[in-house]
Length: 303
Image 1 (cartoon, rainbow, N blue to C red):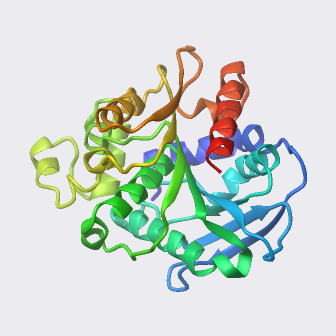
Image 2: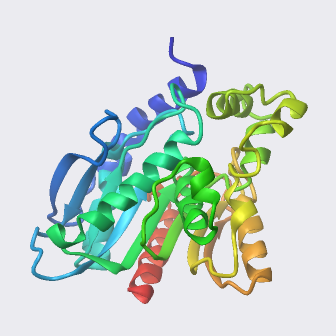
Image 3: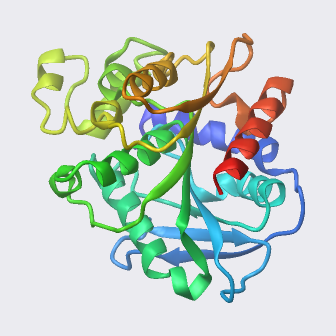
């Protein structure tokens, strides 16, 4: 039987699919459902670009979808791929799927994200990926996944403990959109019909209403990206909003901690009451449009 949180996130994906993906900013081509691990059905990715031509190297954005770690799909982020390619320029956007915690607990999704990045490294010559200009992107759970992959690359032993394949990619930057970076806080808070606790149980396998059980969880320290950021963390763009009901102020805490480490960050913080969690994916508000324009400026500045 489908869990209540997964049901909610699937409804959101369906309800907002047209708003997030209905507008075309120009022509793109794609190759879909490319396997990056033949042993796992969910481990497939889509590639978007203006044209496939491996005679020249181009920057690449690897974009991890959100969905509360329980739902979501790469197909629901085809709109942002179209947007970035037509606004930034001659780039690739790769949208991977990954195992969801409806069936597989952490660190399954971290392992899959690492494999997707390893696939990018291994197939750079075939497609023309510029490995000196690899960028990440993620919304909600996807922002957690993207930021965690950066910390895995910066902390020797972290990826090994999580069972992640090693790659030699150096991430140039990332757009991190409304992510739960302090995962312990996000999954134990009292919010929205117990949604956080229910998601937490699916992600970790432990009862997140029981703080003692949470503290004893095997990966309690490794789960939260904020615990692993270092002074080598790349300059990233954080989008967050005052009206976020799921992970309020997580972006602010990340930015402040990075600043103490001497790492610069860009941000867009909305104070509009209707700009809820990941409001900018639909670009239905002026602030959403402005945020995404700032993200494009940021990406252009680092590639």
